[in-house]
Amino acid sequence: MPDFPYVLTSSKASRLFAEIRDRGKPTKVNRPWLEAAGFKSKNDRAFVNLLKFLGVIDNTGTPTDSYDLLRNAEWQGHLADIIRSSYQELFSDYENAHTRTKQQLMDQMRSIDSTSSSNVLDLKATTFLNVCGIAQFSEVGQETLTAVSIPRNPAQEPRTEPVISHENGVQNLTVNLNIALEIPTVTDQAVYDAIFSAMARNIGTLLSRDDSE
Image (cartoon, rainbow, N blue to C red; front, side, top):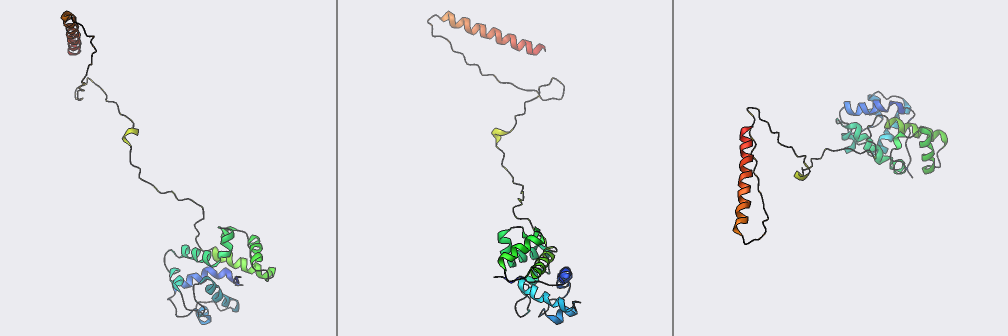
């Protein structure tokens, strides 16, 4: 059963993580480190337990790899990942647990930690929300659209018809016609002569008409 931490002064959480980014990496994060960073209240000492719960420091107060992640430019996203991992019991039931109300979180925590009083659950939910408030969560289930290059299918491309114009400067269009004729089989040569003679006359008439236009 997880023992969710709470800090009476959790509203100072943003200042705490600012100190982690701005100050050099210490050998230990402990009471002297907190006091040197300006957290001199007795209630501020609980921040050490919070950082241990988050895995930012180990049980001896030594900074972990997560501590280093909180010192780079994407620290808010890393903090969100750290919170999801540390509070996995909350996020396993509600993927966006950080968006729930304090009362909803208290009810959820009560089902996990039945020994804590309502006042303590209130402090634990408040601490969780204050830490989540400075993290940057990418909402679960939100789809990210990625541009994909789709090869073109020539058969689906729109056809562009050539524009025929008689204006000067426009390239002439050449049209080739293939004519297929089905001629009945006959024994009279005169029939074939008449067919081809008629074709010659008609084609000649078409060509003469085009030249005259």
